[in-house]
Image (cartoon, rainbow, N blue to C red):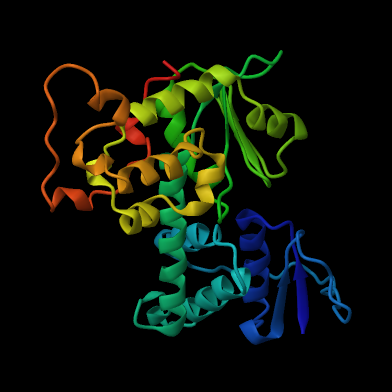
Length: 294
């Protein structure tokens, strides 16, 4: 058994995998260990050998699939990628197809990664930060997979020249207005800024969410599918959600708008049709988000 240790990045894994392929090492002969895994009791480091020579031809499309799947946190994170790569190089093109056992697991992981990237775009809440030397806006997020580096460029396009950062328990990204910096181990200062934003930003998010909440459209099951419970604790509006749901069940669903607006003078919005009631309690994301950072 060859134990291949590397730094836990796809770039380095690709280099190590290439050497293993050129040496003719089959998947069952390898044990992958990144820098976040503790060494096993009987692990033996791979012997240092001369760099193997030769050429491998792998399609860019396959490498792109493997790089995306490498963001998935789970068992056999790297061994599955090598198994798919090994089989593909051996001529088994079915290794990447959904009907194949390895291909099916690969596509399941790709789907989970894409969904978590969507969660990042939908549930990140940028808030002002007034701490000295801090960026204009900060956000805290706890992703289930390592999607931050690949998916955070979305915000660089939206926030323009404003500086911002997203901190997670593992890694972090910082946009200075021109360049995106990714740190695999998030600096403690970034985490502190992200977890202690200015109170005015939180109040603005809560005011926006509370005023746009439509109790007539509440569907608890659908809402929790689109806005999983694990995100509530880090949303500024998170504490409002149980209260708004309770008010909806207590009779507020007869109104087609938030309680703070339903009691005011003016034209009343009728309750939505039964089909419209399936629309989940909306999070604030994408084009629905308030223009906080403009």
